[in-house]
Every structure is written in C-alpha cells, then in structure tokens.
Length: 421
Image (cartoon, rainbow, N blue to C red; front, side, top):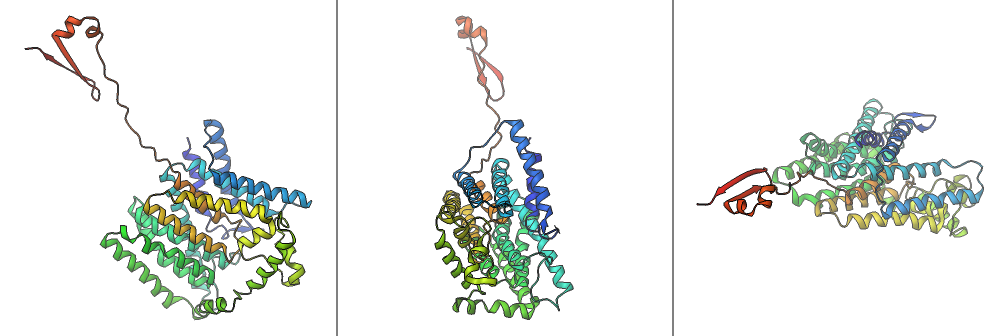
C-alpha cells in the first residue's frame, strides 16, 4: 500500500538537486508540486492503514524548533508570515515523510539513489552552460537563477552518497553510475569556482580512504582511476579564471576575510547579544545587522550564526539537538555504514558553515536519510513453520499408538509410518 506514496517521495527527492532549474516567479515549482503530492499521499496512507511509526528524538526536536520559530513570529507581531517559517513547516513534513515511508534499508538506499540521479541532472545542465558560455563567464551554474555556491555544496553532499552506492548497491548499473559521479561532480564543483564547495568536496572525498578496506583489488583500481580522472578533467578543462579564484582560498583564510563574511559574522554576534534568548525572529538577520553594516547588510552566510540571531539560544539549542540526535544514532550503525554516515554528516556541517543553509531541503533530507538508515527495519519474508500434526486416533486409542508409531515432519506435512518388527 505504501509503494505509491513512496514513489512520489522518490520523485520529490530526485528533484531536490535541480529545483532551481525550473523557476517561476522566483519559486522552485518542481519541488513544490512533487512535495505536495508526496505529502498528500503520505497522509492518505497513514489515515487508511492506521499505521503511525513512533517518532525518534530528532522528530521531537524538529517539531519543537518549528514551534519555537512560530512563537517568535507571533511575538514579533509580523503582518506577513515569513516564507522561511513556511519552509520550516514543509521541511518538518519532509523529515516525517521519509521516516514514515522509507522504513527499510532498501528504501533508504533508493532515496540516496534518487538524490544521486538528480545530481547528475544539475551537473549535466551546468556542463551544458559551460560548453555554450565558456568564454564569457567566470563562474558556472545550471541556470541564471541557480547560485553557484548552493550548487557546489549540493554536489559535495552527493559525492559520499555516490561512493557508498558504488560500493554497496545490488545493481551493477547504479554502482557504475555512483563511481562515475566522482569525476563529473568534482569537475562541476570546479566550474562553480566555489571555495567553500571545494572544501566541502574534500571533506566528502574522505569517504574513499575510510572505506577502502572493503574493496577488492579490481574495485580499488577503479576507484583510483575515477579519482585520477577527476583531477585530469579539472586540470584540463576548468577555465583559468576559475582556477585563479579557487587559488585564493588560502589567502582568504589567512586574512580572516572569508570573502567579506567576517564583517557579517561580527555584526551578527553584536545582534545576537541584543536578544540572546528568543532572537530577533525568523528572516530578520538583515534587519538585525543593519544598524552595524547599513546598506552592506546581507544574510549571515553561516547557518549557525543565522540561527543564533534569528531564533536565539532556545531555537539554536533545539536545532543542535536535531544534529546531536542524528549523530548519536549513526554511531550505532555497522562499520561500513557508520563511516559513510559520519563522512556525510561532516560534509553537511562543512556546507552549513559558509552559507545560510539551515532551511535548505538538502540539509533536512540528509538528516532524514541518516536517521532512517540508523533505524531501518529490514523485514525478511519468512515461511511460517507449521505445528506438528497428531492424528486423533493416536490420541484416543493407546493400543493403536502402541502398534503403529507415526512420525510427522512439520516442514512437509508428510506422514511416515513405521511398523514394529
């Protein structure tokens, strides 16, 4: 019964990486449509089946966080509900849908595969832009509405997923697609010229040495060839102007400028001290730092600082409780899955440092799939063993039972009679 809503959820996850490819009036129409269909079918499934899976601590923390954000909106008396708060509600629904529909490990792996396929779509779209506008652009993304930094971070999250699927997926086609994504993903991350995306990609690639102990010599050679091909593509085809921008990463770190973010972070700390408990409210970071920065006020470019300023200590601690609950759950996974999950979790944390990503669908999807893997219920079909059958005559007539000993095999229900000599 749950196969239809799960299929809708799979399509929604597939559309996540390329949601900015089709935009109408600055809205990602694809994820809104697919998400609404998946949510409606998931609610219908729960109502009809009467099954409601018991929540994990991460769901309780997420619900409390959304409630805290809503209380902040009400307390500030905002006339218009911020879009960011509505996004939080939708993201909680995504967290619940994955928990409710993807119960088994097979379905969780299916969602990882959907995200990988969607990453291929946005990667090829970016390559198409590069082939048609290589001489006029310095940074490349799938469309004009797609932020190169967001694209790079999304592909960085897909790297450990691709490697894990390339090692463990039962289908050979998916395994090869997982291995082939390494050169494609790294090449496109290079095209975005995102310094933070490159650092996140390096963190994601640590999944390779951490899991190489399970590789056969043939798969090890294939992995090394994929990594070598990635480097060759980056050297040969990434434009020189893009390489020059990536080369300034070390200078930005040494000067503590971080692309102009340090001034934003300092202003954010000042704004946090003004309202440390409840915060300034959802989507108010720019307004909160404007007294310090004036017209140069921007979004936080740091998810954790954005949470502190907008939601205060209460909302920040609830959000961190979600992360801690996921981390404690993945530590109980088997060795290979645990190493993959830890690398993916570390990559997620890296992506959230230079960007305002606390309300990104990719972040909540990773949290949902990690907690789902940690509590997957692989139910195997077992044939029930029938109880042994004893004929009524043997019970009523001891003399008959004494003359004829009857043995019954419960697996075949075949009676074998043995006469006394």
